[in-house]
Amino acid sequence: MHRSSRLDDIQPFHVMELLRRARELEAQGRDIIHMEVGEPDFPTPQPVIDAATRFIASGDVHYTAGLGLPALREAIARFYHDRFGADVAPERIVVTAGASGALMLALAATTEPGDEWLLPDPGYPSNRHLVRSFEGRARGLPVDAASRYQPTPEQVEAAWGSHCRGLMVATPSNPTGTLLEVDEIAALHAVTHARRGVLIVDEIYQGLSYGVEAATALAHPALNAADDVFVVNSFSKYFGMTGWRLGWLVAPAGIVRDIEKLAQHFFISPSTPAQHAALAAFRPETLEILEARRHAFGERRDTLLPALRSLGFTVATEPQGAFYIYTDVSKLADDAEALAHRLIEEAGIAATPGLDFGHHLPHRHLRIAYTTRRERLLEAAERIARLRL
Image 1 (cartoon, helix red, strand yellow):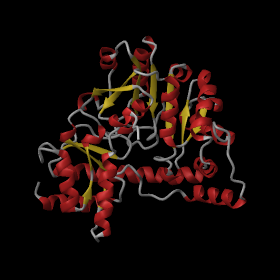
Image 2 (cartoon, helix red, strand yellow):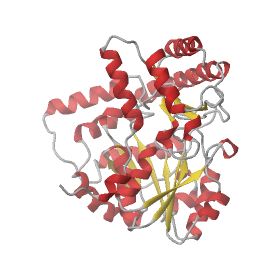
Image 3 (cartoon, helix red, strand yellow):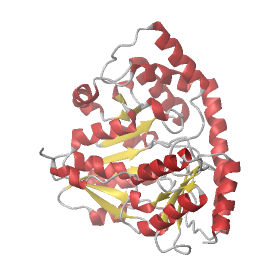
Image 4 (cartoon, helix red, strand yellow):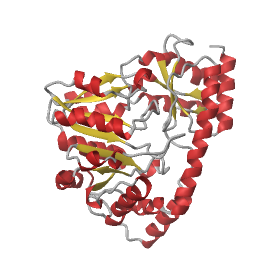
């Protein structure tokens, strides 16, 4: 059978391989502390479950419009206004099958074969593979603690070539949990706009920030009105709806009709039960639950950071968002992947090696998620201490 040559460029998601091994060990009776997958341990908020239950019980479960339920698009627009002071027309909001669906649509709508996209390295691994799937080429921009693991305008300007289509950034970022301020995003956009490029801003961890207020690029008038900026978001992280597979894309008004055509062919429509459930995500009682969980994540971060540092892990830039710590382990081991395997086999701790996130010093880094309760985080630290790394 003929295989597309693009498949040779698609690497496995190594964290899922690690998760598979964790499940094998659990089946053997081992106790595994999960700090590898970016999935909150909290259940879906009860108001969301109740809304979904009522809707499914009605039996009226049919396709929605390709762009999503009008009521949900309006609810998202109100959320931008009420939470961030950003006026976003509901007509620009495209409800998608997870944030991955939003990224697919943005890339499909803008990428020609051979186009180059600039991506921070380290960064979320699926981004570069989605670029390749649409016949583009992902080019990593090495970032480190000196720039808070975020690209700078000077770096983007120096890297921009004749085949560049655009830049993708994330705030808060995965795997580092660092943020871009809105003015910093505007400065990056000035570089891409001057070169007739596109800027995609991944905000899927928006709302999960600690010590700083959550923000959106769309609060900046120039970014909100730009015809070359896409903003991606999700119900998975802050809203705690990972398995519901629902996200959204805010697109320039002039391209929404083209994106609608793509969405109709790619997905027909997003999940109807998930959309009706998500209508309850913006209710005051749900937001109260979500804010309490955000505070809990902040406490977990503040528990894990000193514990890791006391064990010899280096965290040069403290995360201000998401629920990850990207730590340099070079003082403890020569190879982070080997260390990750030792942690799971000998200590029952699952953490993600840096090789999932790009090519910039991956052998020196682990991503450790604080998505489990504080007691388990402290237990993980005790287990690591017993290993005598």
